[in-house]
Image (tube, rainbow, N blue to C red):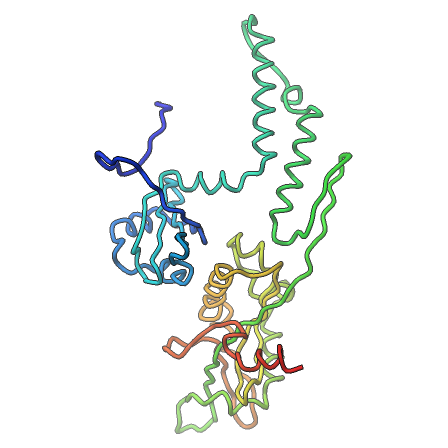
Length: 342
């Protein structure tokens, strides 16, 4: 097998010089091989992932803010600046994008560790150059004070890059870390309430959520009962398998709340550190999936007694009026008063 480097990249003929644009990767998204192939063959058509993160992409002060979609299998990627559109208005094929992303995450200690191990291997080969065969215990190569110190440094650097860690120090063989306290962000959505008034001549019908503000506590009690014992601590985060989300967000718990004379659905997020726009887009996409399917689909089938009626509460609606937004966007006037009202 050839060990020569192969690059999948377009070459431009007779270009006098190359002047690269400065591009910031706001979000890197791994996708399947089939998704990547389809995207690359239809760059000027609307794409789900580009639509989801289009608010992150723009050109400002000579800098392109982009997303990177890369193939989980081949590792190649597409760097895209849609400038707010749902398709790849500007793009470039990036070979070995996955490797570039992983290398970007490497700490200085990891490079130092590789160099130390390579040095030990070279010394072992040099010392046994005349031997007919080679045999060594791994501990002789890797269990050295130098490598132990580098490993401690690596663990410390890796911990400092974790969102839940505020600070980390290492020395004298010990590693000390201080955890961040959890912050809270609330997302709100409209509720769809379906009513069964037990009239044999009538079908189930939808009713405005504002008619059920007196049942806020009863609905929240039903929500709490809908979560199994092992789901109580982390709520909707219990089923999330996206490592980028689970590292940043500890829990996501649904609730209902009366605001502005209406009954709204919501999800309170507990997370480490501040959230950037990419964090909110990613977690909102995951929560929307849980509200429309998963937990949400199960909960909307649970009847709740409201006077003489039974109601069914859904946190999801496929209509154009539906939203899932942070509190500051849904109730901006109230946030303004809270901040400046004394």
